Image 1: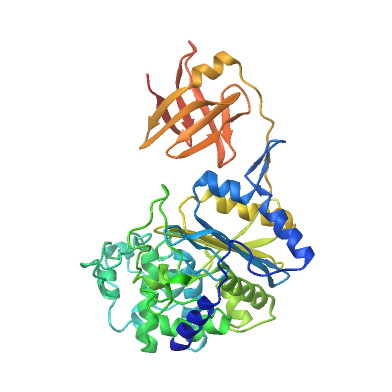
Image 2 (image 1 turned 90 degrees about the vertical axis):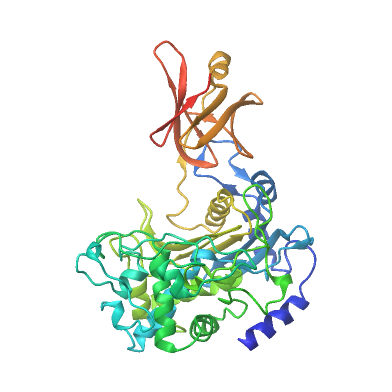
Length: 482
């Protein structure tokens, strides 16, 4: 750990202060970077104004900082930062800036756990209580006499509670891991218990992942962050990353500050996550790309830096066709290429890592803000520019114009199911105003509409007499206020 801290301090002392790219690339790569920056795209093509510039979208979504690394032919082709790591300190994002990876931590954690299986210290199909020493899982009637396995913990099929963790403000008393598992103060989440029989369904549980954190420390006798550094991060070449919570010893200039959706700084700049396996990784896209690349190469049988190809294939095999062990794998219909990913969201931070099991392509995007839309748009742009097969398959829609009278009838405020929005005039058309966001509305016909920023259709509900009753979206009616 001392070596990694010294390295981080040394790197931070040499960081350039200018915004954006810190490395000069070849003209070909520079051209692709420029294309990615100017081809952000949504889920739908309308035939006009369907591609955007990254800085314009950051402004639209109130995004403070963005960091991107693009993987091409099993290598990090480029990495670049945009915007502010900390507005108050006038500190800009560089490719070295560290972000909270949040739930992407689970992907790396699964590698650490499976290394124990590779060494014969655990059997992934045996009762977890055979390996837990300092705490035992409290089985009850809801587990229906079924024992929970490590494989089920890593694939979110153990039937356990606690989706995620809110973290703790800096300066607040932190719980021990066992207090987190038991839901005892000062833990701010409930106990991790069964809600159904294990192996019955895939239901996301950060709580279950935290049990694997204890399993690692019980079996190795090491601090979790030290084990992960030695057995996973260092072998992957992720030498700027760590599971340090709090991140003591890392120079502050390297740490991005988190910002809420309204642009306000997270109290204390970021939250602390003693739930390290589920949410504790500090990293940057270039480092995290090394995990993606190793997964791709190992799956091909061409690398074994952390896991053997056989164990990697086991890790990347979906359970119940949904979640693999630490990642999500899917095939886009009608395509055949298999992509894997994990996303993350902590207080003031969002991120995603994408890779492909059938090619050497991928991307990692990390932001210190809470508007997810820009992440999807950036990934779509990378897929377009780099020609990802079977990935970017937008819906094609041709908008129609509404009559002035119909547009006027749709203007107004709508609310329902804890949602409030307003339809307003925007230029010659209509827009949806919700919170601090303003999205242009496009119409497929007189009643069915969509926004480029949010996938799916909505419908204006109109009575036989022509009175607008509300907006029907995802099966819920937002009623129009009189």
